[in-house]
Each structure stands twice: as C-alpha cells, then as structure tokens.
Image (cartoon, rainbow, N blue to C red; front, side):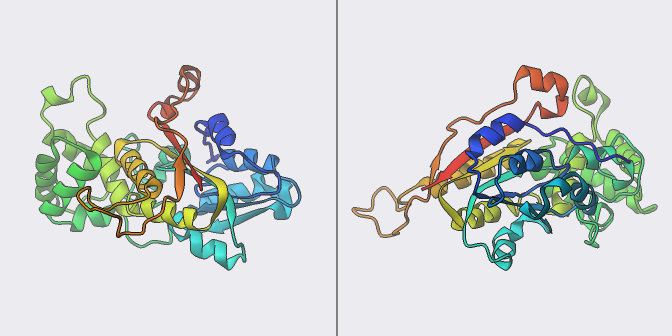
Length: 311
C-alpha cells in the first residue's frame, strides 16, 4: 500500500530547530520523510541530514522521496536509541539539531497486515522493526496474568486492566489468541457494556500498551535524549513530539534533569554532585497543533512538541 503519513507540527518543528544551512541534523523517526524533506531543503551542499528508522517500509519509501538530495541525506536502518553509536560510525563529531516524532506512524496503523490497529483484522504483530522475532503474539500468549495486568495498567492507563488480563489468560487456555479481532472480542467481553458507552474504542488502551511493550517505546526515550545532547554542538536544538502522557512525562522529566545545575538534597550546605546544566528549556509549556491542523489531520490532536537547546 502507499506509504501515507501527514507530518505533525511540521512548521513548528522546522522553526524551532533553528536550521543552519551548513549544519548537521538528525531525524530520529523518518517515517514518510515529511519532516526530513523540509529539513533537507534548508541545507546547503555542506549541510547533512541523518535519518533513522527501524521500519523497512519507511526506509524503502524514503530512499525515493529523498533521492533528490543525494549525499546530503544519509539513511540509517536502526532504532534511534543507537543515535550516538551510529553518528560516531559515520565519523561525525557533533550535530546541530535532533527531531523525534514518537509513537506509531499513520502508515503503520493503516497497513492492516502489521497488526497495529484494532480496526482491522490481522495477525497479532505490532513490530515496528520486522527483524525482531518478538511480537504482540508473544505478549498476549506468553505473558503471565500479572505481567499483562501491569503493562495494560501502566502503558495503557486502562481502568479495566486487571479484568482484561484475566479474560486474556482464560481465553488462551482454550486456544492461542492469534489475531487482532480475536483480542478485540476478548477485551469487549472484559469491559462492562456501560463502561464502553461514549468512550474511546474499548481496545484502544490495551493495543497501545501491547505496542509499547513490543517495541520498548518508553524505554529508549531517555537514552536517546541523553545521547543526543552529549553529541550536540552548543546552541543545537532537540525537538520531540509526543502523543500520549507517558511519553510526554518522560521527555519533560529528562529535559528538566538536563537543565539542572545541581541535584543535591536541599539540606546539603554545598553542592557535592558536580552536575552541570547541559540544556536550556525553550518550551516551558508544550507547543500544540492549531485548530486548523487538527481539522486537516485529526491524529494530530494529542500531539505535543517540547524543545530544548544545548548550552
């Protein structure tokens, strides 16, 4: 299918990156290459853009969409948690900006066979990187009831997590749960009908939780931020778009930690940690999409952009 992805907060990201024409920039989540293309347009022949993606479909499409920029763009088939290692492999000493658009892409949701969506019937997969053997099937069929309860509660923020976990375990005693629709039906049975009225799709939070677990989406954010800042030139910007409170909380917390000069307890008479502030927070409150953008792209509704600058 065609790789469709509408770039969220596009103008806001480009403006906040403060792109220098001869700079070196990293798009941690290339996807459909919407953000990447706009960054590349603003670079001279001496500038460079490094694009990361773990999805081979995105890699193949982006090679065509970014072909016009030639050697100015380098595509890396890897998770952005490897940003420091991969940048060093390329012989680059410092970067001038980083952009990360977290979460699942529109293409991944829309391509039914990937198993990301509760709206299409498909094998339970949800892998962003199909080189990984571990999939949603393994989580649903192999995790204990306690483990399922934990991830659905923690990553899905689902009030009915305990009941959903119980129903999943009971169902798989008869046969393995192999498809998205089989899982959806189990979730619907677990959530009382009165609790499903006027709310989001009953499977939305559970699918989010399983997807996050399969791809370790939350576990790699802090490392990426720390590593990106460690190789960033002074005045370089890091721009991160999040789509739910769990991601946003991590980004906000990490930016705050990196901005602090000292983390010693308040009762300490003098600093003993020797921690130095590494970034200045540019967005005290996150940048949100305009009403016009939400109307054109409803999936942008929950997006938040946070920006920090290397000191």
